[in-house]
Image 1 (cartoon, rainbow, N blue to C red):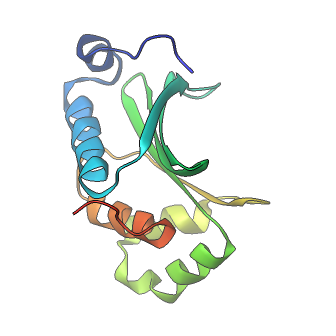
Image 2 (image 1 turned 180 degrees about the vertical axis):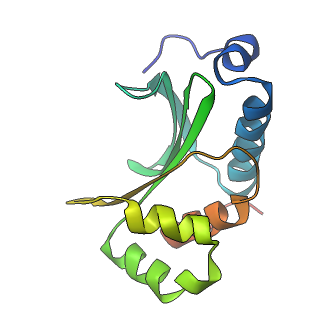
Length: 137
């Protein structure tokens, strides 16, 4: 866990103004639908920061930031993959591509998106709804 979260200026300098806007909109969308614990962490080898949404020891999703790039990751377990696959034709071509190209590990299929706009946000919310029903109205 990070000692202090990056501030607006640091995030804007890292990802750029337009992607910081995408980052904020995605966070707002998740927070509108889900009441979750949130934690800032180091981003590992590939990312500068990780911003994780969790509740009761289970991760809903995580957002990532590095120079000129933001990431949105959701991990689908076996039953969640079956739900996605049953409804895959209702997702955008880009969402299906990321799903098909993502590696499956013992704990699930790790879907990493790198949004540059809000176009896939409806799919992101549907993916999250597969994992957990929204707990905010």
